Length: 308
Image (cartoon, rainbow, N blue to C red):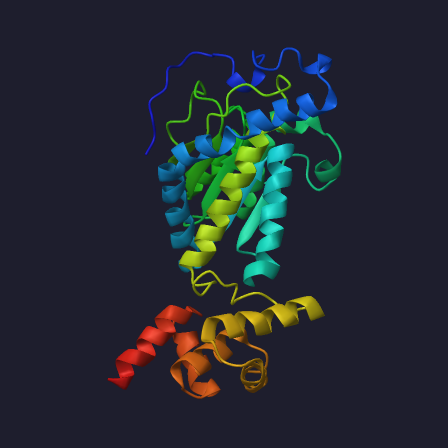
């Protein structure tokens, strides 16, 4: 899973001047935006090249959560902020338990809204934080554009010592000292529009990677049915309306029947879904879902098998 790297320090591509944007400060506004957009369009292809490694990270994380363990994100600056947003959105979108994904951001909560640049240089702080919260069986995913951020690498070192699996998302093909990390997700986004501003292409790549990673984990854990959000929390009028639409989309029955099924299921979308698709009563649907860890397709397969 890891790739040997030369033990020499070479400047990260993200720190270099981009030859395509040297006239950036002389461009009319529209051309300036076109220049930024042209660079942004390179990012998806860089992410695509890293998908095999990302798939391995998804499998490690899925295995950890199925085993009752946790997934940890570790980052500094932009990386930590992106990780915080991704983890926070999994709770309302997929009804994921709030302790499944844990974020460790250099500088703590204060650094989410304020620049605390020196916090990323403290490898011992990263190590101490993971030593206190991670355990064997967890999966720890670090994020750092340079592949060298001490806080992140210290955290990954401590996680390995505890017996956790580790991964790193980074944008520097010249990063060294990463051989002990289980999964290296290298997304080579090249030089930034503004040299060294990794909130741009490298940050966009991390956003794409995190969203794909966490969504794939949720799908594999049965938090969707087809491409529908059947595990979401209906906590407001908009989401309650979406719940009804999802049930209609998945079953093809009338809005009235879906509303009645949701009432019988006490608002549990998955129970109502299995009830309508299989014909069993809501109590039986709830029991089979409990036996399949809430996985709708597995519950339907189990019901089909027992009906034969």
